[in-house]
Image (cartoon, rainbow over all chains, first blue to last red; front, side, top):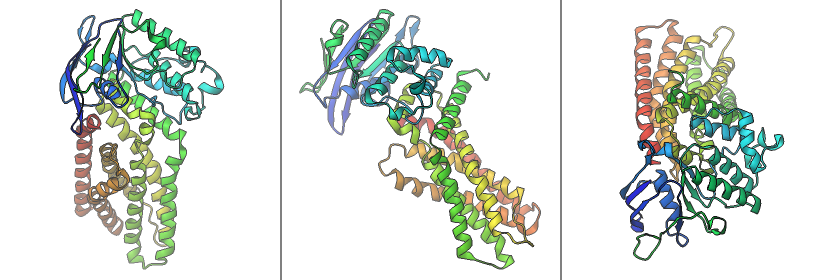
Length: 214
Length: 232
């Protein structure tokens, strides 16, 4: 992924300016900065949800440029999981995987739910996910991420609400994704689990409004 | 062809939409209950009327009630998608936006039919007299034509007001003026048909207008939906 001179301002407040970044296969980029600096805005902009004031984001696969960014990215927003709250876990995962072109059977979905401790008939089917705890909803969103064939993961506070066990599962999953040639951009205030995986840090929110990579 | 990404997305979105509606039946049932209650209140309020006026009152209250009930249906169209940022996530998925529009349109047609069917049947029942039966399949056909245009308008306005803070105010303000030509054409064509018992040139003229607005709203919906979704 190649980000070139990306800028974004919100009502005359410059959040990031001329941000350039190149992310290769196997890289995990930590997006750092104080609260309100624009880290989530940056991820939303890369995901295509916000239009930048200037700059471009381009994607290159092993066979050349990727025309539609949506084929390459999986976005996990902060404090939301993209779940149909009145529906069950299996229905939710089936829906999102079908949109990715995967026609997974319920047993295949249940297999994906197993590591997240959600593969129980009383939890996975006919039980509205709105009744899940915060951590369980996050686990389900991470199971969706795991099923996705997208090479780029945009993770905004991915471990929000997770217990220690789920955090370990997620770290292993992320390491496997990177080992397979995927990449990830991550905003997280809890860095300890990812210390060995982070290859680059981008700081957003310096006084000049520019961002720097380290 | 039916296995192309377009149709795959369409099928997935329609199926998900139906499941989301069934998971929250209150959303589906409340417009029907609203329509039936309103018709009942109309019947009590208006009371017995002269036979010459009966057709006019029947059509006016039926289509007006249906218009209000459908507005409830339409304005809630994106409610399941607004929860937990599903809509935002959809925008990051490789979904064909025309398939998305058509799926929402199909869903609205299904939901609208579920509201319109009982409304028409009940309105005919409470307004008819032994000497003057009011139920007519031609009126049902006219109502279906009206629904085709109103549904497209509903999807379009729902997408337009998705992120608006004053959505509950903005939606009816936009919907009712734009729905008026459809309502007018539906009432006039039905009234002329029920009065004469045949499809005259005047009936055809009103139906032509109705069809024209259907085409306009469906075309506008298909063309603008992508822009509206991207700008949300």
